[in-house]
Length: 315
Length: 276
Image (cartoon, rainbow over all chains, first blue to last red; front, side, top):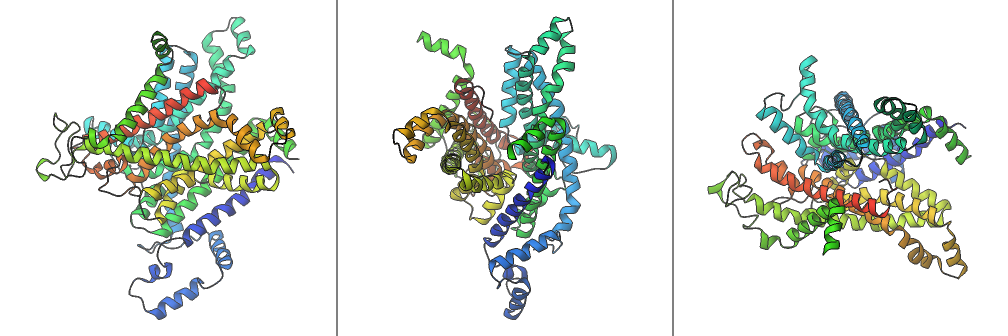
């Protein structure tokens, strides 16, 4: 069996495992779910009817199978507060989160790689140390605090950008700028460090010395010869970092009033709206697994040796 | 003395980060002595005062001294950061060692569980767990630990698998050492440097995650001062009283920065090829 089929099949147990964990979490929720659904003053007869229709009397394994069936149909239950379908709400808000994450990814990739190359090229100088310190600082900043500081600076002091909300067309870009920078900064710093290490490794290889020795300019060697090979570990990190975007979007969207699933999850937390919270957790995990899958597949395409090696070692 | 000075000049980052961590520990331990005011004392006559000689970091909307609250907040952050790291290290060590040393079906089983926990975005999982538990010190620590153990387990497993093929393990086993003894006396010491690096960086990560949880209202509950909750509580006063969110945030950033930098320096010293 080839690498790609195998890798795709490997996600099945992971997805099952995720559904088991969320199922266990749902079972462990405080309070009686039936009572929660019907309200505090519900008739015992009504409670009994709901209990039967939900099947809470059945053995736990059967309940899990029922839960899995619902998940397969994309059914995540209804919000306790708005009584709207959670899956429909998520489908509506997900594109906003993806736009934000994509913008943040663009920001962090540009800045991170440039800073990383800058550090590697100036290795050992005061600039390298300063930039390294800066990137350590960037990793250490709490996302929510950074967002608030940016709002303070760019919206209240300089009055350049709107503090929160969303817009359409060109003004949409203005609204996007601060949240994207907030969300992207942590991974920009992480990317810069990986790019630096990777670039230093590439620069120490003989073919770089050859290129320099035959008289090519430093700039040409760095951007034409070294850059492409530097990118291999960097691309992996960009993909793997997607989890940090999901984590960060919870906080960033809350601060900037961005109507995505992160803010939806936080609203769920504040109202103790369990179907909403679990729906968001499930969606986040699913996205994370799919992105990791995509990264592995792309990686196999970029560097065929990896796909080959994996097939060999598992055979 | 001269040698010490030389050392400082050669590795300023290590010295600075060590100093910062020591300072943090002193602040946390000596909080009642350092804080000039009671962090919980409400005084409605001095609300929203900007930073000045009496109230170094100003006062908040209830007239509480922000400097004292930041000082006491160090206790919570450090306590949770350290205890969550210790606990997840212990679980990760047991799981990783068993998986790596025994191998076979045990390995497959443990690796599957580890991968599963790594498949969730960490903050999202921590949120899901802490929603279930009554909010407080224990639940935050537990949530962080359940999220964090898997990366330690993966690290240990990889190290043990690489180590157990080495000849000194074979020698120990030939001399009649029990499996327990080989694991505890021969394999574990080899893992220690890497463990120290990973744990240091993890403390920073956990403190950051704890502040995010308290920012979302899932951490230690008010009025107990925590840095994350202080920021969340005053975020609506950003335009009029920014100092109320500035100082707790800088406290988080500096603390996490110190642990990250310390971890980096340890790595450079102990194991330069390691990537965590």
